[in-house]
Length: 242
Ligand SMILES: C[S@@+](CC[C@H](N)C(=O)[O-])C[C@H]1O[C@@H](n2cnc3c(N)ncnc32)[C@H](O)[C@@H]1O
Image (cartoon, rainbow, N blue to C red):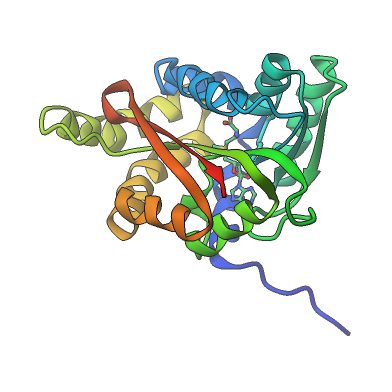
């Protein structure tokens, strides 16, 4: 009898974190970020729209918020990929509710996209790299599917650089966020609220921003630029496939 291969540790963490979040994700992602998530998402969409794409891959699409915003803004067809079936199902429900015929959703890992080389005009990914075991290999895989000249853009949380905001961010993520998660979404959101701060800090300790920029360049992405937003709590990074 053949047993299914054990998923890599990062994928297991992602499944544990997102299990049970899909139903309330859209509302709570906004509340708990003080409505900054929508500003960050709009900046990400602006970066992708600058390349006037016709076909976009949106990786870690979750409930399809980015995919829907992309198709509404650019008229492009968008294929959203997510590892977690619960999030992908909610994404599909949101796509149907929005009657967005240009968006398709599939269950797939960012580390291994079911797409041929250079097959899309642009690619977006959100909050992904903290959940993969080999960020450099994942960035290379994302770049593989984008045609030369196409835009690749990412949205991620960040640690504020200012010595004024960093301690306040630390306090918010370690104390307020778990409690606010518990009060607004129950135990699954308390767990994610407790997980997020240490996950963000640990990610940047292991992979500082300079490292990430050079990983993008090593993956064949040029003209890399970034924009820190909301006092440094969010970051949008984009570049062009060489
Ligand atoms: C915070 S949600 C972001 C959802 C959406 N893009 C947004 O901006 O609202 C992160 C998503 O990444 C997905 N994810 C985590 N690891 C992944 C991987 N290795 N491949 C694909 N998706 C992954 C999770 O299942 C989750 O839905």
